Amino acid sequence: MATVRELIKAFSEAAGDLPEGLDTAVRIGVCDGENLQLVASAEVDYWARISMDRSVPDQQFVLVRGHYHPGGEQQGELLRGAASDVDDELRELTGDDDAG
Image 1: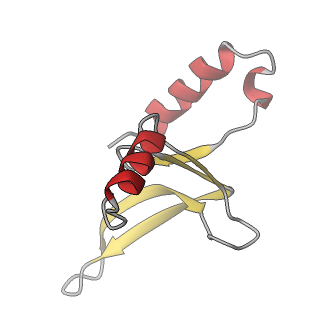
Image 2 (image 1 turned 180 degrees about the horizontal axis):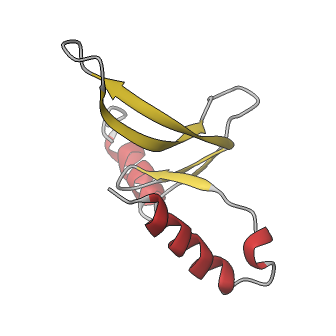
């Protein structure tokens, strides 16, 4: 798990390599092992988990919550993996539409 300090450092280092620096746009992406889903928007807040048998938080952390809403205004963009076209063609050739 990354810390806030580690993320700030990584953002600063990446931004330092770009013309707009810290004013560069940020995109949030979720990798499923093959594809990359870019979410349309995200929010940052804190989060706490409280167990049922205790009244104090068990965990507290900063949460980056991406919003991916297929078919909606916040649809995002799916960047398919390099082999996905080959996989689709193989499924068409073999008639195996359930694979994947």
